[in-house]
Image (tube, rainbow, N blue to C red; front, top):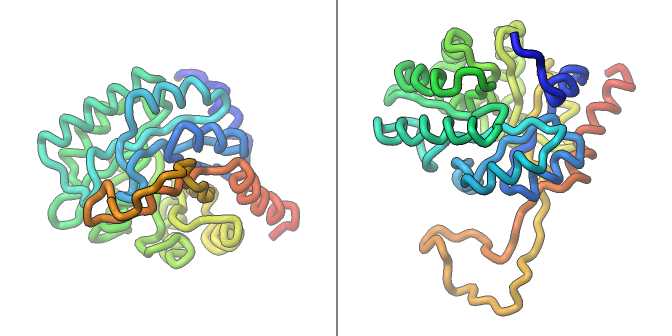
Length: 267
């Protein structure tokens, strides 16, 4: 068995694990400064996260010394029913993430009936052999979460990122609690979507979950002085193109501290 690296040893000593959904190199660096155990590096956040660029992964790996780097493998937004061509892209992206030093990858495939696409997942699990694998929030749109959990254990996934099949993890507390009990330590259950400094202690207390995924982002206005706000780069899909949302070390630290307070208080 390989010896765990410094990042693994540091994380293993903590009662909770904190993963930051990071949308840029800057967000990753800030996540590390705030005390995150790992980052999930994504592009295309408005689409729910897509595979980041070569340069983004490479520079992030160079700048993260104490924080594990997981890379989302998702060639497009939308559903999780992938074509053979898309699966070939995903295999290539997993290989690239490995070469660039990523510690893990994040993906999920469903069939047309909302069940785990076993053939697709086996292909990607083979490509990711030796890396940590998270099945992402495709889980939240599956047909049967209890059956899906057992399937993912059988496939060898390390953890499931889920909001409890609800719009936010706080709303999904009942199912998150049930999934945590069903898993019995056989697979990690990581609560994500809408987790923040105001609700993380409640989610932890009511579910028993010990892994959390959140963005800790704040808005930063663009430095552009001249602005033509009549034109949208997304055509009919409009976002605020003169605003940047970035993870801040302060919000990461504040959210983590909320659980530290809970532990000290014996709650």
